Length: 112
Image (tube, rainbow, N blue to C red; front, side, top):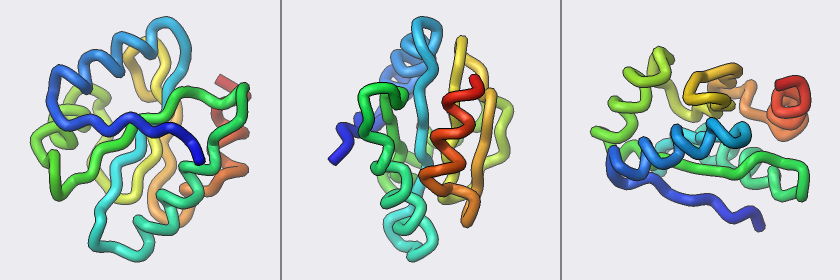
């Protein structure tokens, strides 16, 4: 299974944004109370190949402040589930709800 680093503070979020300056990273914002979010999370953690970007996640019930902070920093309206490909500190691709699918995530990563 993919190693996903959970973001629990805005300092964690800033470190992820800084890491995206070296190579693209993927962020998943998800809810533990939503079946659609659970399916999106299962698709997201499928990104475990050597060529896939590093993975980060925010569970909105545990870190609402971090979720809001990232929505503001990335200029992306919050939704769950939401997979955001981040490069150079900016959102370069956003998938929401049913569009959080492994093949679509890989395609976006390969083209960015």
